[in-house]
Length: 240
Image 1 (tube, rainbow, N blue to C red):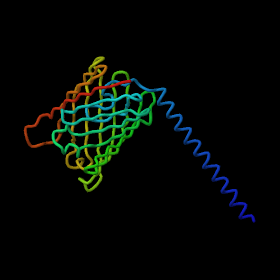
Image 2: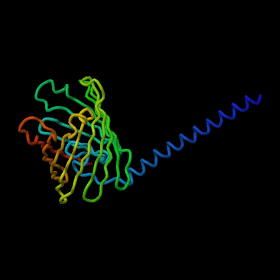
Image 3: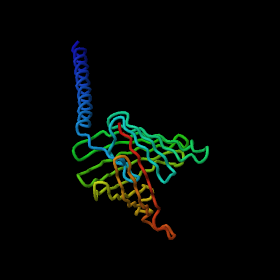
């Protein structure tokens, strides 16, 4: 009889603890949502990424942007809810096979306080079964920002998961002009090519359009006369 009563009491305690835990989780989600809403930063065209590296910043609900990289890669992204981006990528439709390059992405900003934001992202390319999952932390003040990210890349083209390490910064020169620097490296390169790849660029940022002009440079010996790989990117922002 004692054992039965003890078991019933233990079950009631576990049930109570479970209920308290669920209440705490729900309360935490509500607080995060309210903080994200109340502390929303002003979004400007292009803020969602540096030249290539994602940032934690997102558009207001209902807004969209269209980005063209080198006239070769197209991206359209929509913000269906607070802190969420849904995007479609593809190569420019030069041939019918361009549909094989279609990929889909989602980014969710889950932390937003005065100077620090963080977001996770997932990108998927069905044709080659490639998946990229990452997280980025963005720290900013009035004139500059620093972004640190890591992602895991896997798919039919690789035998094991490849980790990508990224760090970047943007420094405002004027109301419409900023300098951008990025650095990236792969886990598999670190032992053989520890220097990685760097990018330096400039952004011209208007109310609706942002232009990025940059140069990409491998920091290891590429065995030829290569100086920089040019990158030109245009982003058009559509707000409500």
